[in-house]
Length: 320
Image 1 (cartoon, one colour):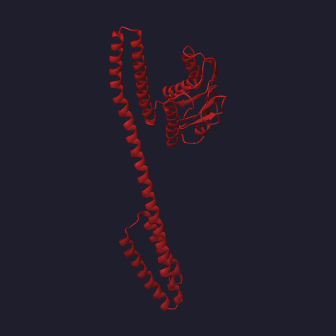
Image 2: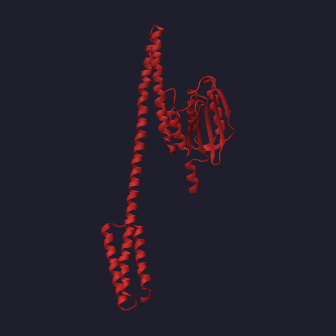
Image 3: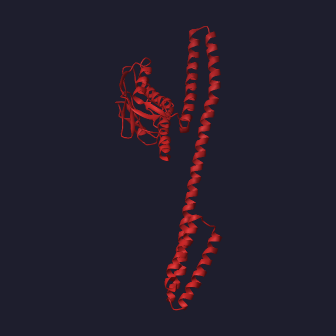
């Protein structure tokens, strides 16, 4: 079919591109195949031209198509190199995260045993001391050891919070959760408690959401004094729910609360900052987000935005 020589010629090069797209070749194999195809198509096209069915300028398509194919090969190899670099960065980030979590876990476990032993000995010595002044000194030691023990426990909770595969998903009534939290904190903290908690159902891990809510309430109590207002609210949103914990305390440093670093620090009394880190990890494990709003001197508003269904459940329903 000499009249259709250009159609067949282009189909050959299109087929070559399709085959290369299925599995990329080495540079040596690519050059060999490209040379063979260029020689075969060029020779065949030369015969057609020699018979007078086409002009000699048609032969210019052979090197041009070879250049087009080489351009495609260059882009494919450049994309493959970029993808390999991205995968390498992701793998390094994953390993760094695993090492960090392993360090936090080991540090927490290793700290708790000596802290417990030291606290027992401190209490034993305190009970043997004859004077109240000496006992007060040991009270300080016991209190500081209790703080270290709490810190070790929070480190362990923080490590567990980044394990979404271990979440126990189920229906959670956020209104009931808020009311129970206030009932637990009300006897221990003399604050002006306000609760606006209608029944709002989402799917999540109730125990971890309770831990996150406790951390927010503890933060509000820590930065307020007796008689200050602490409000807990929840409401249904378009694709989930919103939980607010607002207080009338000293607030957060505005430059740190809104800098987008993801690690807001309180301004005022000293703290470890682990409370909000735990909350952020739990909320992000649910596919949501934590927002910190501060307007001195009116206090702080910490907002958890939670989806109706967790990412794991959404993926599962999509697969089905």
